[in-house]
Each structure stands twice: as structure tokens, then as C-alpha cells.
Image 1: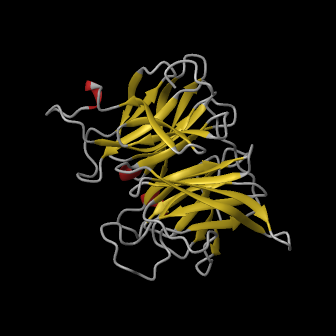
Image 2 (image 1 turned 180 degrees about the horizontal axis):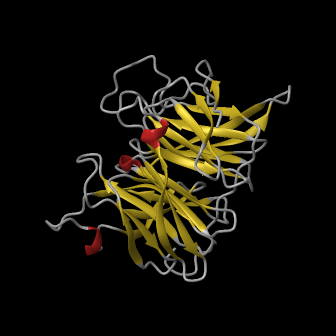
Length: 325
């Protein structure tokens, strides 16, 4: 099939005068028209209100920047209260209130033996994750920034009652989404260079029939390690995923075939999600994750693509939380 290539290598960042370290988890909340993302390494949550300028072009206002000291934040979970989100953090799932800037753990991994290494110590942090239609959190856990990917990494299902179940092992568990009918789960294992798909039973809330869906070494044979990272689906269940170290966002059809590739002006793209009006918002990462040396790369910026497609909305956790959440 013919692949369409789009050159956006001269695209300017959407958020002006902002350059993060490792931005991730880009999320759109339609109930208050806000765009949210995190900076994993800096332990930051960001939020802007999406607006239009005098010419009707996309703009934003009120860039809020919240810092959680001594934390890493991997993912944002929306709730039915726009002032409150849950976040996957270094030591567990935490609740964050924007108005009071209060951060409080609801559930800690490091108190559970199942998440400890063979030497009895806790070495993990939250990476990407998602919420299913039943209110379960499917959280990716990987080695913390001190040690990097380790064999203890896994995809974990956390029920609203706080029960844990390790679902899959993965050095870097990443993006996760469900089909429109809720019966297929798509999940990224980055270092396997693969997006898998599973049958998902909404009644018993379990997955089965794990199948490799997209192999990224086949898509990018000239790259040593084309790692799929965060992704989203459009309204036709087609995948849009970023691919770390390739400057690319790739659009696949429901057969896992490449439809189009969007090239961006920075090497490390990390996540994407649809906002309003067929706009795709994209996280990127600084080329220097290990130090703060200045560079001309635009990594760490937020980008916006206007494309002819419509995205999904994320499941929200019901607030007030009935059980542990």
C-alpha cells in the first residue's frame, strides 16, 4: 500500500517559550477544553486552556505549571471533577488538586511485596497507562531513572478496590488504549519494538489472545531501535503512534499497515493525543536527558498538527471515588 509522507520538520512549537525535559502523557479534557501533560523527570504537571485567536487560529491561555518535589510523574488520569486528576507517580497512584496544589498518594506500590525486587527493595516508577470502561487503571511500571529498564517492569491492572494484578512483563511498558467497542486492547512494549493487541472482555475485565500487531523494526528497518512510545486511536480504531528516536508520528490502519508518516523537527517524540477540531498534539523530549547543557534541538516542546481525522476521548474515573480511588 502507498504511504503518504508529511514534512513538518520546520514546524514551530505550539507552546511558546517552553521547553521541558521529558514531556509525556499529553491529554485533552473536553469538559473544560484544557490540554494537559507531564514532565516525567521534573515531576511537573502542565495545563493550558485551548482558545482561538482573532483570526480563528488555535491558541491557548493560562499556562499553569505545577511542580511535585522529589517525584516523577508518568501519566495523567482524568476524573469527572475537572479540578482533580489521578497521576501515576514514582511510588504509586496519587490524587492531585489543581486549586489547592495538593498531592496525596491514594495507593503506594512500594508497600506491596509484589512490586519489590528479589532483594526486597522497590526500584520502579510509573510510566504510561490507561483507564478501561470499568474504571480499572492499567498502569505500566518500569525501572526508575537511577537504574533504567529492569526485569521487574510490567503492565499492572489496578481495580477501584485497590487490588493488583500483574498482566504482562515488559522492560518499558508504554501506551495503552481500547477499541471503540471496548473489546480490543492495544498495548505497547517499547523495547520489544511492538504494539500488541488482545481480546478484552468488558464483563470479566480480562484480556486474552495476545497477538503481535505492529513490528516497528519492519516499519523503520534503517533504525537500530525504533521504539514505539505513547499512542492514541482515531474514531475508526486506527492507531497514531509516536516512534522514539525517529522524529516520526505514524498512522496505521486497522490491519496494522502504515497509511502515513509525519516527520517532526525533533528526534525524540514521546506521546500524542487528539484535541478538538482534528488537531493532534504531540509531546517530545530534550535531546539531553542526562544533563542541562543548552542545545538547538526543539526536543521538550509541545507540537500541534492539523490533520483530517478525529480522535477518541479518554475514559474518566468517577469522582468522588467510591473505594480506594
